[in-house]
Image (cartoon, rainbow, N blue to C red):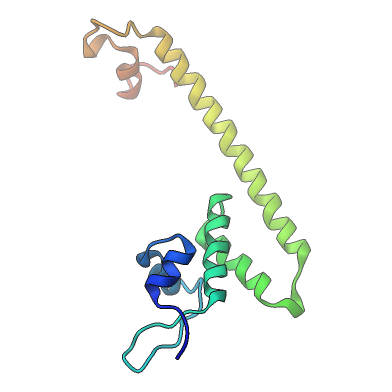
Length: 139
């Protein structure tokens, strides 16, 4: 049986072996055929699939979202580019909300840092520690 061993697919996909196993367990890649000895035999298409998964993760998609994207793209006869567009638009909206939340966090930390003497303060006199322990309601 020709194909790639799990170590080879991991290397070609730039992931570790446990990632390949995990993707298989999560049904993100199809269960590969096995040799008589029980070794998995992967294809080059599996390498492409894993690279697709990794690129999607880098763009902020969760594994559940990626599974949905895969199901959309796997069925070429019923492929719906509008559905993919909606998926991307929803992810953009989520990212914009995360950016706003991070900006708020940044402002609070900047304000607290500006109040901090930086040296020589005791723990009870530190505005950052006070805020984190609930002693100061700046954030």
